Length: 422
Image (tube, rainbow, N blue to C red; front, side, top):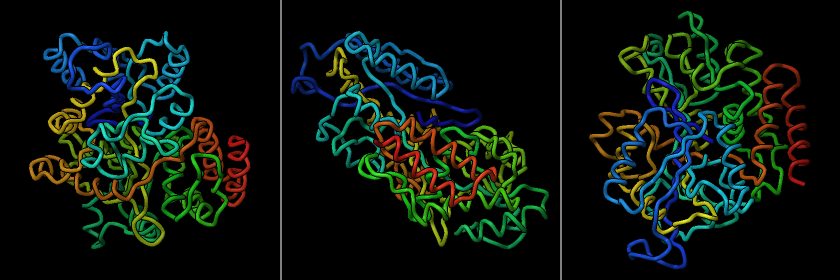
């Protein structure tokens, strides 16, 4: 699942809910029928507690359709494993509705665990356009976006101001500043999430996408990674470690380790999700008031972020899909999406909220995040995404650790991904 974190701590908020499916053609505003009744929502641990508040509001006004929240482990891998095990039980499944990481949509849809949804039931035109693509598989809608996310480049605004330079707009500028300015101020240059786990898959995909390449095509049926763009993207990451402007310790960083390094004043640049900006700007942060954020750079200009976030999907064997539809309509409504941001510090999918002056005053990064989301792309779509991600993590980490050249790494990636796609 794509973990989405809120200010102050790693927040893996995976709300398990269903958005808008109406069984047997029944509309959500029609009463009665077998489509109405209580629901069970499965979610990874809600560490901030904001979701419970939202569901209390629902339960007070819908006593016949009360929602029971089932919290799974905080770990994305463990949550995925428990959801998959439960869904394989078919009509014996405990879960009616699911909040799935955006990268799981294709896998769950191909396995027949979630049902296709009628696109005309949902206000998709009111969402940021790229997030809708994360909810589709094989040309059909299988989920509805609930929370989005995109990577940002955080930087020490005070340091760049002293040097009289703007934030980097290209990889060349990022490298130059990380190599020359950072040491002058006792800082490491640049870091992302480079431990071999899902975060490295995201960072690697962003590097390849930013260089104009891709990893897979045709919903995972075609391997497209063997390209000059992929070699350039992976080469950028490997060169950083080799030349020292990416510290070797960053090869052990996940979201929280990299956030802490930046927040403690040890990094000039950091690629991370918006929650890290919020945390670094908090009064308790050592760099409070000294932080800026811009979209990720690419080789010659703006780069491409990978979309994070979560989608709401309905179990194929959900007991009360009409109630699930009503619940999702509630959770994706503009007032509740506003609370998703203000209570949970999670990026909403409703486009209008990114232009709200009051919210921008409270969350200054919103315009930058909107720009990043609109230029972002989904992770490689595949019915075997978990295997794809493991291959990408392993190969790219080897390249960054200097165990093989970027050229050899791309060839290996192509071979191993082709074996998965067969």
